[in-house]
Length: 274
Ligand SMILES: [Zn+2]
Ligand SMILES: [Zn+2]
Image 1: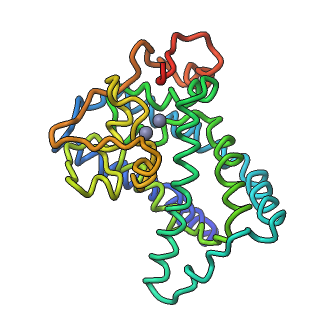
Image 2: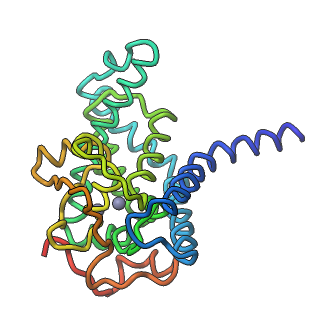
């Protein structure tokens, strides 16, 4: 019995800690060096509940998602391109190289999925929930509409499994995704200089969330702005460029329910490419 409780606590800590620690860490930093207005307690409460709704969907659909992704891999005989030799370098360097390659490929697919979300009105209706946050901060990282994970499975994870033998989706990558997502959404006055073009930081992603016209449809990549550079959507932020965030002409949702049904309602919205 005591063992069961201990195992239960370890499991909960293993799931909750990677989510809670970045929120606490970057949430504390935001109070020290904010780039814009800080989020109210009410705003935090809304975003945390939206995070739970968002995380519930892949958890409930985990078996189906895993099945679809592995079927896509089986169809191509385990992936058309074998990236395993790169990942099989032994030691820490091999792990780092493997994770970087995985994240670079992940980010390529994410770039195009994300760009489509801004291009097509039906996808923008979902994604705009993420962009409506006017006090952008770490809690917005998983303020994502619950339907998005289904889209990502079909548009990102299935093609990735079909094309690449990339069995490195380990805990390291999952933690990197959670941590980096939290970092780039943080409300931090942090200018990375020329490094902004190499790794996406909070300023580069704040430009993506900007409500100013000159920033629309810029900086889609989550990790490596090289994809924005290659496909012509990169905006390099100036030292003091920390624009206001949100979506012009779109009102913030007032409750979790409003967020859940947001894409299906006749709310006023404007496609960002208009
Ligand atoms: Zn976006
Ligand atoms: Zn974002």
